[in-house]
Image (cartoon, rainbow over all chains, first blue to last red; front, side):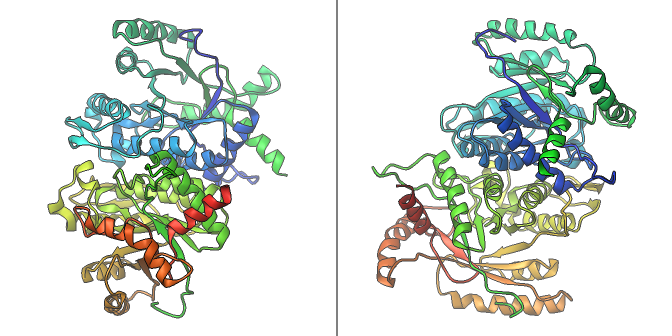
Length: 297
Length: 297
């Protein structure tokens, strides 16, 4: 963690993976979404600190409108913090993203968070007409605008990736200042420095390999914060995980999903189909699903 | 109504007006949003058939992300139908709108509806960089794409107002075919014919004047449906209203708000600040607010 002043918290995030029914057939997108609402509510009951939903636009991960799902979870919970993990800001409009999460923040009584990402998986780019050649510019400009929006008050902004704003009030206003914003970093030092520059939190998105290789990013973040005159900020660690009674049992349960995902041709680095967790510690979403199912019977 | 085959239903819609606190000061955007969730839940308890939220981007009407609010209401209700009233499709992306309402439809177990409008109030145009000169083209093209998305299955589409789609699967898929889509019509026969052409429902958005002048639109809609070989479809009527113990009392309570709104300089036809209702019959949102407040004390 960046500093002892930030308490250790445990969150769960998920891409909203479609699971199979008892006959081994994939359940519908709609049922996947309803299950996710139940999982968020259950996570709150278990005492988990944060529940995050990652944006994707595929048949396996049909969670394209995470904020609407988070709105539903917010309505049935009182304590757990709720957010995106991540919002693919590069292919979205910062104004809409701000509006949706400011609305979620209102509904949840101040429990909204956003993790902004460039999109390590790029399924949203063709869908919204973005060119991968603009990958870096899109993210840089949009983070810049998002930071302006978060300050509150009328925004004047100009860039190349969306229309300019001239003294534009953007609603709904937040109730008590900015909600927490994280930059999801998969391995780019530039992204670490960007997070520090804007005074956003750092979320290290570890999707494979030895977590220790991410330690330098945490140190870089602290140095960069000092250099930009920012106060210390929390660092989060996302990592795929699976919890079972023993380590061996966990490996046995998780491996088929991981192997399946690694073998699939994807436009991005392979990742486990099963879910992941973040910040610190690890707990597995599918464990949550199974517990929930067990409770239902 | 278009036909006796469609049962008479009563809905409420609102722009999410900011109200004043006991000292006469406007409440916060966040509290306005939270009140709206309570109103939607209360409307369900009262037996109202539909609850709709109109998209706006102003300090008076901070409901810019209606779908997130509807997600929260969906999570706390089982029966009432939920939708936009209206979604300003012209300044939004049909793919995102489909994704958000398909997600809402999943969460609510099939209770989502969308009313698509061109934007009789145009506060979203500068915010998202749209030119009023394209007012007609934007709506026509985007309704066209929305109709394609609603069919389900991969979409191939090309236009001038957003990126083309090539055999693109858009998720989440709906569970049981298309959710209801209405075209909000304020007075344009062309919009009536458009609704009939796509086989969408017709929502007559009466914001002032004698409702009887809208009767020809209902007849035109039936004729156009026949001409396009579509089956009969329901017609809805939206109208501002206020319910009180007597007609006189209702006028007395409602008039100051109506007069205030009519006097304000706006970029669109004046409309009552107080809310409105739809489909048939009339009931007033602020009545709902007061009842709710009374229940709280």
